[in-house]
Amino acid sequence: VTHFDASIGGLGGCPFAPGASGNVCTEDLVHCLHAMEVETGIDLDRLLAVSRRVEGIVGRALPGQVVKAGPYTRRYPLPDGIAHRLPARAG
Image 1: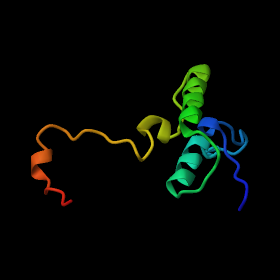
Image 2: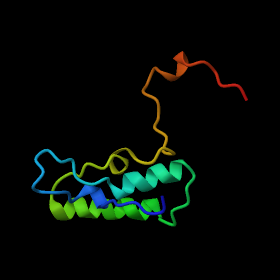
Image 3: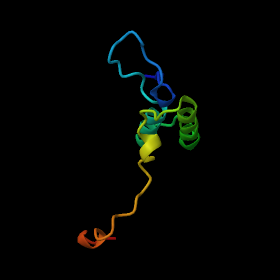
Image 4: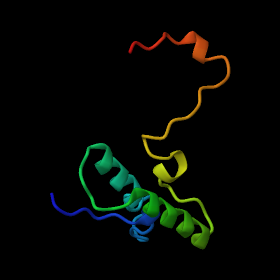
């Protein structure tokens, strides 16, 4: 496979197909490819900025997941009281 069809925020699809889910989100696809170490030539941070801008233009949240949660490399702090319950890491 050398080409993928996707759209920013998953916008689009067929208005004549009831219940159609629309298109795969470009930002989610690029994120997935990067996680698999496939070079895309696309700057994911810039792509996510575009997706946020499109959300503002259309006036609603788009279904993309990476724009909401961030890339898999993003780390979140543990909730209070959790860290002491985890085993210590070796190394």
